[in-house]
Length: 298
Image 1: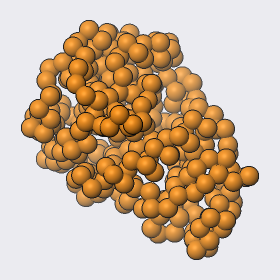
Image 2: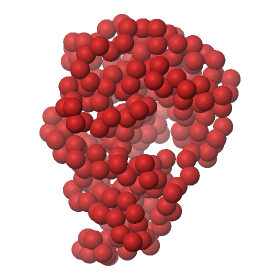
Image 3: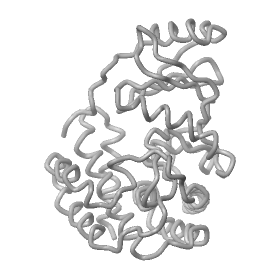
């Protein structure tokens, strides 16, 4: 298992305070708490009401720009809160990328919060998630961002899947079989639809007994909705998965058996990513293992 990608720029709380002082001086006195140091971004809470989102790698800078451009347009039609940027930052001599300030959205990541859910809770989450994706998965404009690894036809990412499988351990052969089945299924032959692109349990916030918000749209793109629908195996127990698919079908008339087969393949592909690159991120490794187990139980 490999480590997650190295940072091109190391970001400290002092760096964040300097950026605030230069570009948003009214916030420079606020407490700063680093929340996450992810594959693409550092997230830091600013006072009580804001979160700074700063790319740690060059390739993530374009992703932040896409969030700033498109999330304000998408948010009004979505039934759950998303982190729409309320302020933006520009590169400086000390920090080379654009960055954002978004509202603080309360809740606990689903990867840590769903263990205590009842069956009724899981069905509620399944319904809320299906409603969210049904609203999001609408035709995207031609200028929507594209991602060479998300939303694409499965053969396009075959070399990446094979590299991940080489580092993923005992589950790799079974997961590649599922990807092969998805590759053989009927492809998405309709207009590209808007996709979250990275919809896994660490990017869903739970409040109370349901979903409070959907976060981290860094991989926002357009393409095959099967990419997002992989979350069914990453988050939900089997009975709730059945509810999820039934609810989604009410909202997305183009859903069908081939879409489910491809979604299962995408879940296998994401499991390979997490299993292959999370040596220093136990949370992501746990998502990979749990996804592989869910796929293997069917």
